[in-house]
Image 1 (tube, helix red, strand yellow):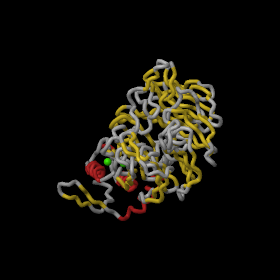
Image 2 (image 1 turned 90 degrees about the vertical axis):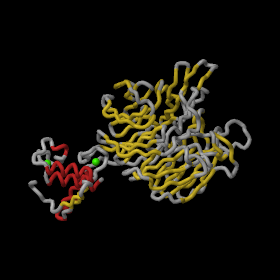
Image 3 (image 1 turned 45 degrees about the vertical axis):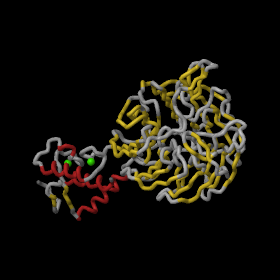
Image 4 (image 1 turned 30 degrees about the vertical axis):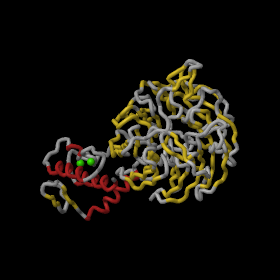
Length: 494
Ligand SMILES: [Ca+2]
Ligand SMILES: [Ca+2]
């Protein structure tokens, strides 16, 4: 063993666990770690459903491919969605059938992430859970009196979410301790809905927090039923005190969208309604036909609202609207499932293909066959798309598939935050993937003793050939102290 700067080895018989220490390197390691950390891609939180209050599904963070599985969390129970996806909706009057579900809102435990914490609500076990993003271990959980169907929102160190028990809650993000709760109805009455006893005014919206104000909705009753118990509300993020509370013309279901002046509330199978942020004044509905509606919605930065899925005699589609006036502008995409809209381009996912469109002249830049139709997000210049038991990374440049990985179930939620890709499925699984580190010699997602043992074995060999990945630093055909420095810096940063 040449070029030895290691001062001492102690190997425990039969366990292949070795201890190593050398004090002289600590200064060097500190420098290496600083260089390593500064070289990482700009990390970014994903603090609310689909990243932001426009529900863009887009982050500037770029994950370096390939990714490797880091951990998988089994939530114990699969989600219990509020509404069945089947049988397919039909419209006998217009003789159309096989419509897409318009209330596809809680098929998975949608995740959000801030710092090194991941948060999700559970429709099957009535709680919100916080996981450590590095190891997937539970940090805390908080139980409510009913299913939690929507992703929480993280805002300035607090976590906000609603429950079918009628309350919205504010907790401290770091330890899950209670801060305040608020509910729209004053009634303690319960009713039977979606297989559970829930509040007569369950919270069936996400919560949007912006400018120190929390926006949400509650209630399920439509029409002129007495005791409607349906609300749209705004309260202070710090205190939970009411700012305004209104009765919307129809019950709201879905994730609220917030623009500089307005709040947009999807309304289940019906058309979204929208309200003035300052005082809750109802401003109108987006779309009008009985064929329009749906909880899938996003707001582009040029103030267009895209939502659906609508249906027509020729199929289903996502519509495009002027978000200031609610006026219909066009059919954004036929047979569309999901889309991502940037300043210059739109990306559309349908049952069979993903397409990139130039917004200025609506020209297709590319269109590729796809078997990943259920979810679509954008991270830097990479799309991530969800299919059955598989997630894929797709190049925005040419639509080529750059990477795929198996997951457990149908992908129903995707998020990218702080160097991790998070995938939730209809089976209740949450998978974390991270960029594969060159120091992860056994490809298990972690840098630990196992990698060190592999490294040591290579080092102890007189000639290592390709060095089995252990020639980390110089790629000079030798395993030596400089490679050990790199392994150690990876390890300390992991
Ligand atoms: Ca490893
Ligand atoms: Ca080397």
